[in-house]
Amino acid sequence: MIPLLEAIGITKQFPGTLALDNVQLELLPGEIHAVVGENGAGKSTLMKILAGVSTADSGEIRFEGHPVLATSPREALLLGIAIVHQELSLVPTLTVAENIFPGRLPTNRFGMVRYGELFREAGKVLQKLNVAVDPHAAVEMLSIATQQLIEITKALSLNCKVLILDEPTSALTDHEADMLLAFLRRLASDGVGILYISHKLNEIFATADRVTVLRDGKYVGTEKISDITPDEVIRMMVGRELGNMYPPKSERQGVPLLEVKNLRLPDSQASNNFTLYEGEILGFAGLIGSGRSELARAIFGAEPKAEGEILFNGQAVTIDSPKKAIELGLGYLPEDRKAAGLFLDMSVKLNMAATVIDKVSSGPMVSPRKERILAEQYVQRLDISTAGIEQEIRRLSGGNQQKALVAKWLAIQPKILIVDEPTRGIDVGAKKAIHFLLRALAESGVGVIMISSELPEVLGMSDRILVMHENAIVAEYHWENATEEKIIRSASGN
Ligand SMILES: Nc1ncnc2c1ncn2[C@@H]1O[C@H](COP(=O)(O)OP(=O)(O)OP(=O)(O)O)[C@@H](O)[C@H]1O
Ligand SMILES: [Mg+2]
Image (cartoon, rainbow, N blue to C red):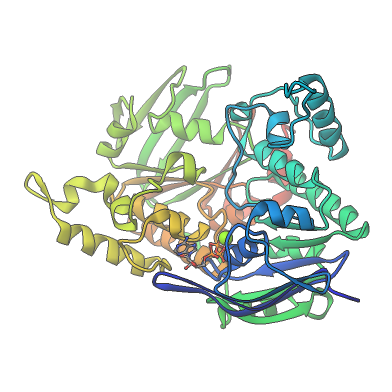
């Protein structure tokens, strides 16, 4: 069978980083081909080259056996290669329909957009993919998960032969991810070749036909999924055994650190009560939209709460802004790094120092030496792969951006740290590192609140687990009594 797409000897050098070094990849028609590797391994870079978004320094790309080099996304699309990027790229102020057909809006003979037809066509595509969204809705009003589905719908509406998906499920619920994967299998059975990047090995093992592993910009190998185990894939990715992903639970009996009393979120009648103890990791489980992030933001002073009281070390406090929260020693790692966490144009160093200006200053002046020491310390501790601390953070791979965000909050040396989906988009090795780091923080007395949609992570990390449903805490489990089944039942309101 002639491969649909082949990459041979692809090399790409960025200033300070050899992102791809003589890499190869082969995609057959009707195949779902997973591409895996640690953060910064070069996955997104390779996909961007295949999709004409960026060009290789050397190497050859063949499409249906013929050498090609798409030098723009438009050329790639003409060949039939579509890509869904790791970071969302929709225009927030436009409607769903306009986002699905950018640059291809149906017009009449006067060049006016035929909106009736546009919305009808968009409605058809959305329905075909089972995406329940109004084509008239403005994209900025939609959840990240829905935006991700629109992004995928857009690529699929192009009737492509090759579909590239760069971590498409990282913002989706399990149910949405299952629907997407089922759809991809149907698409593949029609002969479309799919390149699928994901850190979720269970997804890959349930869906892909073959897997190619990259490590530090180098090609490690390609295997049939039926011939290999997840542990073997991990070993190819990181070059060693990883062992247990989760640190042991705490033995501590701490005093109450944070007491939340009768906290009610806007648009809800439920009044929430819970206590966070010194040295514990308190997990928050629940479906997307169940109010976990809203509750966290209300405590952090980033969003209004309808009513309620917060006690910190036994003292009533008013937290009416994130600034106040940080002064008290509260840190909050948000779920959406692009919107709420990173200054993309700034360097790794300045991003890390942003929340701790006083720690990196001598008197009224910022000390470049202290800034550098702080940044270098965290780059090393979290094993962040970057050309240096002066590198603009937008040039880091997705997972390394997430690690830098974690570092930024560790730098404030919080007494309480709330982390919202802390390992989204992070590779297995780094994920384990962040797990052990959170446990070490707890062991040092910090109270950690961890929101996660990944049940194994909630169960593996938490000392206690609270489950939310429709803006209310509906269940509490000690780790010894918690199971996935119980949590799912509570999260769905039963
Ligand atoms: N525009 C750029 N300028 C400089 N360096 C870059 C640029 N884009 C990527 N890099 C570097 O190239 C390497 C590979 O990055 P890439 O984004 O391909 O990784 P990845 O495998 O997709 O990782 P992740 O799983 O974190 O998304 C990284 O070290 C990254 O910092
Ligand atoms: Mg990437």
